[in-house]
Length: 272
Image 1: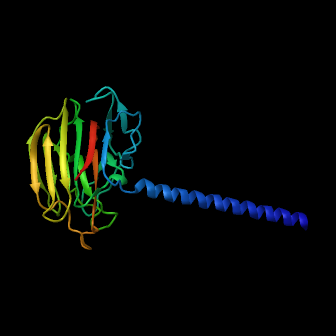
Image 2: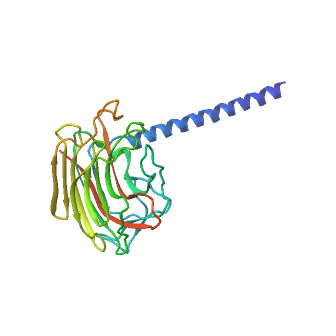
Image 3: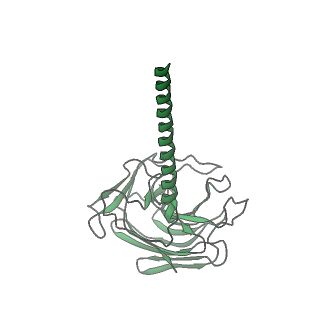
């Protein structure tokens, strides 16, 4: 009896120890996730894509395995740039409510870097399309800013509030804060075979205080003031105040032919 009691007691202590270890691990994981997702108090970040792997500025849930690599063959500055290759079926999403299916490989800024409503930010980045990049009528978005929906059905399939699109050789900067979008800029231009520099100054809000300014190279192509976000209410599904996040890479309607894009010299800075 004494022996059995000792064994049982030891077993109970062992189980209790395991439970404590698991609980401690869960607590540490919870704290880490809270730390990882906490907003940066003042955003001022840069990525020249010089590291062997993608930096912690980016989430990878919108990238297929192996879709992005740091390479040295096509570079703007430094020794490396990011290369994204989109293949048919990568990160596939079935269309809802009558919208088209999509596929993508995009760099998405981590939750800590999401933009706040009524705060001005400046983004800049450079992109390179290879000479054999397909010029097709398929919908293609190479950079976009989305209003954070948090999975609400009313807004889950909304278009980006600002997007950089390249379709049939036409480069467009579009805005969408309702069911119908509009082009703030468009130009027939061949982006292949050279680096193109983009700079955006943005303040997201559903009021008249919104701002969209855009430069391609050294030329300003957009100077817009007015609402730059979907209204925030139970009908639209967006909460107040809203958050906004940035993605860049390749987002398109499904097609068989692969696409490749190179990205370098990304910056995001909060302006005060």
